[in-house]
Image (cartoon, rainbow, N blue to C red; front, side, top):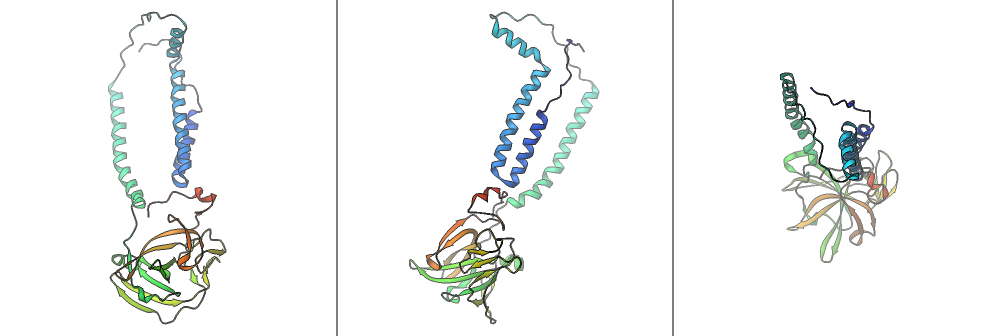
Length: 303
């Protein structure tokens, strides 16, 4: 091969380290926050472009020199340059490229499906259909009913949940219910009513399976694990929880109470049918929803 006398040694550069840090920030942002994703991705693009430009300047300075000369002087025909030597492509290089290419294809064929099977289920829609809890006559007005039910009869006991349901009477001529989850907003431990529970539960059969109802009149709710305390509307009153108790959406279908998907609550003002609820998309236990700390929450898969 012919050499033109230039020093083609690749100089040391800090651009790869900067690009690696930006890429790491992008990947960390996928877990923590979309803001970090945007910052890391933007930094990676800028640093990558600067890295490429700097590499071209270091390895082919004559390109920049020619550009500067033509911009400073009058246009002139380019001097004749010797024809570049034909690149050598030996059998060893062919075998090397073939081996690397085949290895990349095999690695992708093995890795991509495995990673897909691990990650994809977390981003699939996980919502169950509405659960039928039986006729609304089973829920006396002004009284909480400790209600145990299955979200999906086909899944069996693994989908069994407990909610505290209170019938609030009519609101604009429609039945009003307060349906509070028993999942503590601190770490997800089961919350208990702060009051007596009927020792004679009522069991009814619904199209969604067996529903167990126990009457209770609690002054509030408490977590026996870490001392979290809530009032009768689910507002946090003491302890480590960062928000109110989650709630369930509901609907009335053919005189029966149907429970829907869960949502998170910041605070509740008022009581019963007149309560004003600050609703948010369902968040995991321990995550803030109504203050400046919410942006530190990790990315949540669809529920």
